[in-house]
Length: 214
Image 1 (tube, rainbow, N blue to C red):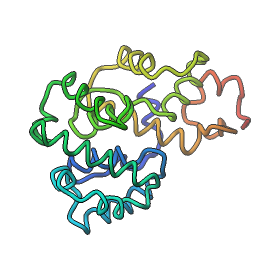
Image 2 (cartoon, rainbow, N blue to C red):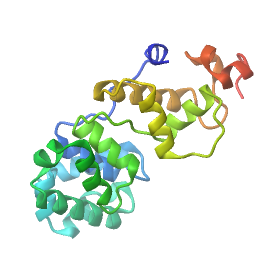
Image 3 (cartoon, rainbow, N blue to C red):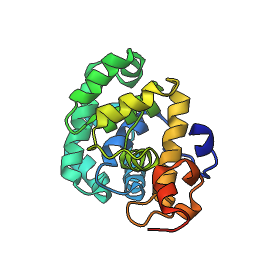
């Protein structure tokens, strides 16, 4: 499946200049579009707060003003500051990211507002840990390709993907970006465009629907 996924044209996924930006972006992107996150990141950079150490020391109201474009900005500001303080208490980003994957994950998942998907995103894209990120796009594509109809279960999907692939951070980054691009452009929630899908020939849903959109 991976070789076929590579036929999909995609943009670079999750552009960031520093590991700090990965953490900040992962928290801010919840319940909003990435374009809004980019506006907030530019605001934080302009105010000199685009780093975990600066956010840990920053005034909460200053953070709120900077990230207002993301929505739920008061809640996110609190979570961002608390996460930054916790990371700094554990030695800073570099030290936390150097921890074994299980220890890093335990710290991330303990942060308020950081669920499994966010923790995996930070661990994969920030710390280069070989952990697969399961999002709505990923599950949509997988469930249609393999005809899986069981209820969504993050842990089971992640375990399955990691069980049938080589555990490699760069591979997982690339696979995730293909899933996102396919889910955004072709394998949409309603009326997927099966006729334009590059993997329709191996997809249970695509085979059942032929070249017709639904």
